[in-house]
Length: 291
Image (tube, rainbow, N blue to C red; front, side, top):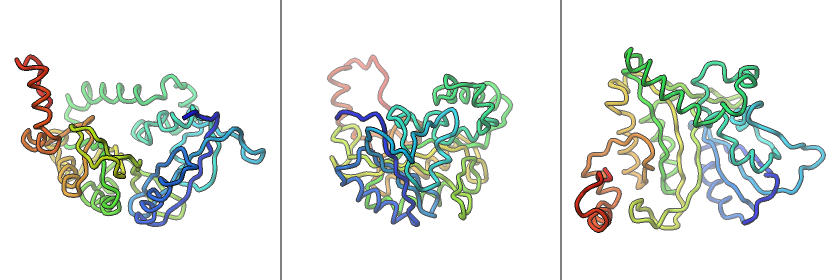
């Protein structure tokens, strides 16, 4: 499919989790849309974001440029229509690592962002800096011994998606003990969760219902409280989320910390199919196993 020069981005507020999920389902069926995603604001509801290619912006709605300044993520709590370049749309989240720059003092001020420049305002820069700080400062001095990073992208069948939001907030009390927050005018401050509709894969090592609609829930925060005693090593909140995902028939993507036992991991991710591939291509066990 050929891309257009601009994306018309329409933001529509839904006043409940149910309305938000229903909006995602319905808009995924529209042939006139090129992009569909959303952000849930706790259990208050959330913002649908619908994108379609455009050749030019109307005279009364000029092209906006997010990234260096203004930031994109604060704009998602306000309804309306923006026109942005397709390149900026693709990278719209990156200059603030979605909203995770909230953990870095100063990056909400335009002068600091201007001094950093676009070459530093990137997710790979933030991750490298964060990793260095954890390894060389926080861990050696025990400053994060009870802090748990919850970095998750989880695929949930669409018919369980509304339930997942409330259950997620129950087992992951980020609103009370987390660092990442967002507020829509007139509503209490709360927790943002990214929602991206995806089709189930047909791949044997990520077993899902092929072509069925799932909602990918993206959530990234650092929590510290009674529920996170023992920190990352204990992984109490992460383990609870893994259990919840399994209960609701979902699948956790495997790019971050995972706490499954080996038996559980191979049961959930089709270990029998993996073992056949392993025996065929690495019969002497030269390479480490998947787990």
